[in-house]
Structures are given as structure tokens and as C-alpha cells.
Figure: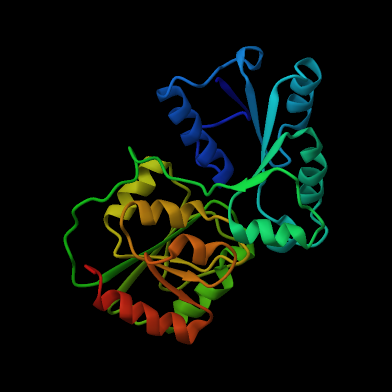
Length: 272
């Protein structure tokens, strides 16, 4: 069995779909099941609403091959109700012989948009274990918090971090954000750094005690997965697919009060 991924991957800092598919391609190559040319592949894997013309061309040329569609998140929930990318992905699913959802939450919520493909399964994302893995770290006087996001979408939690910025005891905590943020969002105490490569993010995680994610309606956060793969406890918003990912690897919160309470619990039990 040979697999071709119909997606133009990049090694530059990018969104979660690119990051996961890049790791997946590397794994397929290691297992000797990847094919660089769709002509020699048995299965064509394509993603969300992206590279529609490319995949449709492959389908027209090789209709006998099996096409598997990995659905992206629910942009109408995550972004806004007029986001056509979700509609395109649902329409684009007509090419598929099978569908992959990134979380049970995503599968349930796609039902609200009358999308329920006959043949589907749930496969969460994963982090590259050669880049993200547990490392020995020295405990310091302050607890180091980290949050990462390539997207500027407000639902990544930026307004909530403003609340944290004005409330958290920064005599006890350092908070670093790595990635893109809206231009009109400012923090007094949270340190902001530009987007980094996976290797650079891994180095930041090595200095992190608790990973923070206030993302809302995110079906399968790569940032959370990367932190958990490094054995970093996660404090995440009780929303979207976050509870499925965090499980016993951290705690959830609904609002600021619960965030402040649970971050104290985590910092008191880091080794556990």
C-alpha cells in the first residue's frame, strides 16, 4: 500500500494542518509506504478545503484510487458563521471514500451542519517524537508558563490572556507567548515572541513548567499535543476537543477564577 498526500507542505512556521501532515509524511516515508507521485499511490490523502483543484485533478485522472479526506476544524464555530472554508470542505468531501475527523467533538459538531459521512473515523493529531519528547529540566524560582499559536484568531484566547496579564501574580510566574497575535492586543507582563519553528518551540517547552491554552472551539490543538508529548502539564480551556486531549495530562478551566485556582494546583504538583 502506497500513500500520497495532496498538500504542498512547508518547513516554515505554519498552521496545525501543515505541521501534522508534515510529521505524517515523514512517518509514512520511514515505514516505506509513501509515494511522491500520485500515479504510484493506492491512497490519496487530502485535507480540509485546501488544494481542491489539485486533488480533483488527481481524482479525474485516477478515479480507481481511494481518496481519504481529513477534515479541518469547524470554521463557522471557530471563526465566524460566514466562513466558507467549512462549506468548501463539506462539498469537497464528495471526492472521498472515507473521512477522518480530528476529535469526537468535531465529529459531533459537524452533525449540527448536517455533515455525517457514511464511512468515517476519529484520528487525533500527533507531534513528531524526534522533536517533541520529555527532557530533564531544572526547577527555578518562578514557574514558567508558555502559550503558542500561529493563528491570530481571537478564539485562540487572546482576550482571556489580557485578563490573566492583569491578574496573575507575576512575582511567582513568567508567562511567554510564542506566535502571531492580533495587532490591537497588548500585554504588560506577558512576553511575546514571533512564530518559531517546531525545533525552536521544543526548546521553549524544555524551559516550561505549565503549558496554557485558552483556545475556544478548537477541534484538536497541535500546541496542546506538543506540550503533552513533552510531558508538560497543560491548563486548557474547557472547550472544543481540549478535554479529549488533556485527559489526565493537566486540568481544565471555564473562567478566570478557575484558571487561577487550577494553576495553583498544577504548580504544587508538577512532578505528579
